[in-house]
Length: 551
Ligand code: NOJ
Ligand code: CA
Image 1 (cartoon, protein in one colour):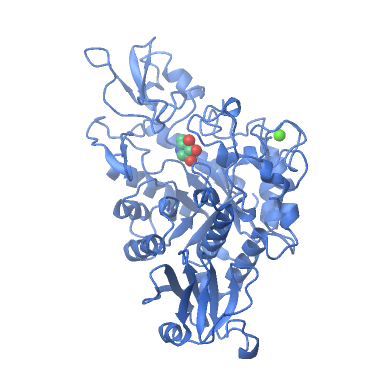
Image 2: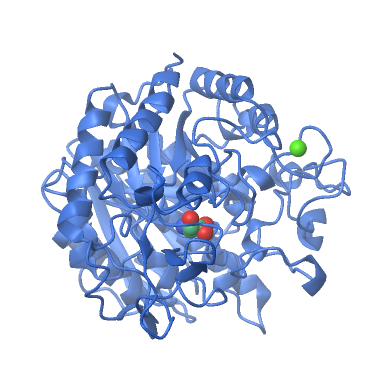
């Protein structure tokens, strides 16, 4: 079993910076246009282990298991193997070993809500009503008029109803996503045992944990009733199949106990709920359910200081004792942050905002999750209609990683499964690698600073009161030092009086870095001046006064 070499210890998932890899899109090693596991292994230097690496501490791999790819791997046909398009189990072991040598932890994606309709369990289940596997899935009789048992809808609007009639056996089966993804019946003890074996299969191989898909809905109400549509995403009614909450939490507790039998493992759940009280309940009493629940609040936050300040205040207030926050700006299901922040008439603005957001993400109290390509400022790629492959419009945020300016962007020598963005010619790793002012340079500096700063590593969080309304500011403090971040979300310069700020901070501020590459110092004595969409990092003490560019 491979175990990681890393100084972060058991709490690596609190102190580390984690990075999501969508395997299809990271690096192709055999020219078939699809990213694969050997490709990821070949690119680990980008992530850690070399002087010019990004410096991240862990990767989350989206599914690489055998799959018909109706949902690009989130339809699993075998939980304990690797799809030949992605490689072999031996390739996985090599990836895990190489990652561990560099101090990179590896978490894999567990998809317990549903399987592929080609999974042997479902093939058996649909063979006849009395098949022993029948009850492993959620079946129900049609209503008297032949219509589906209830009004539940798939999470994907294009799919429509969450029920499909199996003509041969005359019953409907439930699918919260595509009809090729039948939902498992978590009331069946056989399903529970099968998943415990799957967890152990990967833990015994040495993986450092799991990302749990649809962690907030996996167990359905036994009655198949009782769901009133809720406004989960503001303005959009969620008619998706609901959860039996007590049973779901019991399931998560049992998985936590299983993980706790191993050393230094963690589980982060996809909890796609926007009610913060419900959301924090997935941490259990603090240390008995999920280690982390994916916090998607930033993905929906409008570009306003108040919005981000409120998100952080909410979770700082609600998280139970011992629980740890996390934040993320982008993932494979949502438009990339830099594209969300784009203003039609001013494309440069999005880049400035993305830089400010990076500073925020990497200095808050909470584990940052980066999404591949975010570190170079990759935007959503344009997808011509004939190249659309995803059922839910998520192709743009999944375009291939941009390594260099060559035809295949260094991603592939063949035809890429999704078009490579035209901007790859200028926005790529190669072009940014030795430029400290680039997005990659900024991410690298922020990660290195975070790692070396006790205040950012594990210190407390205190918002700074009394700042101009467009400004979000906070202090991170540990016994050995303090760091403050000042973030101007407005489109006008903001001036913060130095004496007032230092009164609030309780220390004399030394300049660490600005998200504006050209920034040399304050434009007026006695004040910190922030340009529109500029972020500043200030530390206790800092550089000697004479060299302080903010004086
Ligand atoms: C959430 C995953 O992130 C998404 O990509 C997938 O389509 C659904 N769950 C279904 O597995
Ligand atoms: Ca390949």
